[in-house]
Length: 326
Image (tube, rainbow, N blue to C red; front, side, top):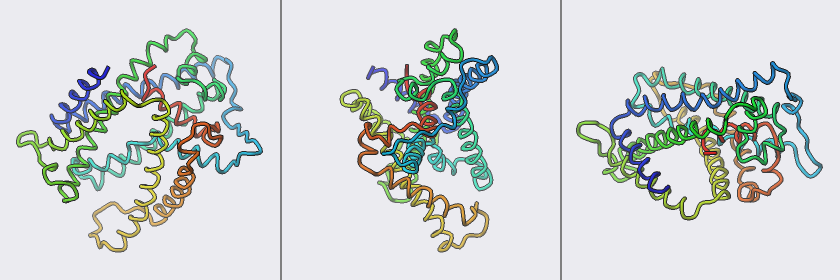
């Protein structure tokens, strides 16, 4: 399996080295395959709804809390964990310099992508909890399989979703290497990292040194994951990623306000309403503080983390088909 993973990363690096145009085209194809998996779940849900199957919409709005659980803390923690489902959108900023007219195009595309993904995740979550009890989804290793089995028992979902998961993993690796190499390239050009990492290929004009560097890191992670990683380590990784992203987003919102005051622009760049970064900071910081609680991050037995709500199921159910082989 290690040899296959290494060979796969070499292919991803080769596509990345070929050029950003080729990488984006491949990304579009892989994304269409990924979305097909989520749309399959949605259509199965609609099929079950119209046929009057075992559907319970009351679970969609159910919110049961025990005496020893604080509702606000539970929702805040669940939202922080669901934040992991949106990992990747912030990386697209690294590609703005390789787009035409990024000032006009990039904000619209970023907000459109976030909106579409959010709607798909919400619909999948509604379908999931309406067809399958929340406790079953929580304990299942493959929650979307349970959803499809409940809505369309005759569909061979065990053979379909692994195929889609393979494309999802490929797409994730491609985009991460693409974005990470451009980030390292930009930092090298700003003299934050050694200048050699900013070297570009003479004919393809791609940052080949940065691509080789990020691929080498991926190789190291593959060896580490094969030797030491387990289910608990993956859970810790997800929680830590959410925590760090929330912290970064809180700082970025403050930076927007600071740069607006200190940098006198010519008015040609995108300018967000002043209240928006304020709301972003206020929304990110409390969730970051809650997510940083030791038991909430490092212990999967924490009652707050294990608390079942629609927000956390959105992250779990939607990302299972995109990130896990069955």
